[in-house]
Image 1 (cartoon, protein in one colour):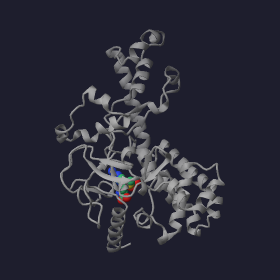
Image 2 (tube, helix red, strand yellow):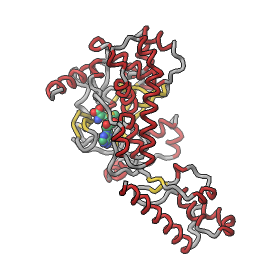
Image 3 (cartoon, rainbow, N blue to C red):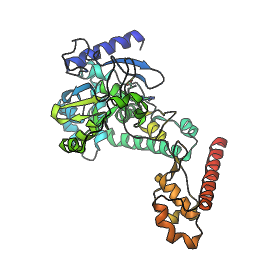
Length: 392
Ligand SMILES: C[S@@+](CC[C@H](N)C(=O)[O-])C[C@H]1O[C@@H](n2cnc3c(N)ncnc32)[C@H](O)[C@@H]1O
């Protein structure tokens, strides 16, 4: 699609969104666009491509976008507006909620221009780079065993789920290209990378305009010094007056987006101060780079939540009851608590381990000798892992 056609599509999408009540402003927006007061669509080649920038200086905690419930595209509303879909889905009770949403999405695409969601559907990417979309060559290029395993699992899972919905999709008489695995991967990628959490459906919802926000890892906003201006603490009295956990988290801006029952809308807030023109970033959750690749198809070059998992020697596993996922090195080079405490115990002579275990699990260094042995083991292990991945 050329740039001009894309710009026209975006324009008609924003008009459609305005008519349905989406707004970035407390007052009535212009009939042509639901954006312009707080936000505008822009391109950020280094951070997610198309995204939303602020149209004015914005303070932390400000409401910047509201999307009414009626505009959220969910399985429930797609089935409510399509009796044939609803009847067909009921005949397949073993399907899970994401399979139902994926079929409902493809069924809507099948309608083309006659779909009520057409202006929105045209805004979806044509394809995705999530792990399930990786071919064999790309999977091998991942090099790390964990990543290769996750990619193989993701493709197998997508293909298995596609086979399970095949009968339903044929009953719905979808066009041949929408019955193909490629279309299924597109629908699954759309769900994985674009849906937002809602309390009434585990598959989540598609949230027009709200799904234009790109991602920044949670915690990064604290580096913005301007935050001090509005980041005041709440008193415990004020806290107890806030009715729910969601409300409390929202008041402290621990969450920057969520469905709010009292206004029947999905609401988006600035989680830090922004200067006019800056991109507003949303935290979709806490993810390692592998998880980001799996669910969203990108990685962050500087991800504070990334982890390098460290396998223990066979004789060390009996010393700890931690899951392997808790044994890792953080991006700042520090070992996780589980890894550090296990290696500290291992570095104690076997006959002395029991009496010092409680000190280790309280986070204490036992002695400088113990620490040196533990750190030497960790350094050697890290070197071996780096050598293996550099040589493969
Ligand atoms: C919810 S959408 C965000 C809007 C998207 N850029 C668009 O144009 O529709 C999520 C997708 O945006 C991209 N994305 C979001 N944040 C990113 C980031 N920090 N770096 C690279 N890509 C990002 C990824 O492709 C991800 O799957």
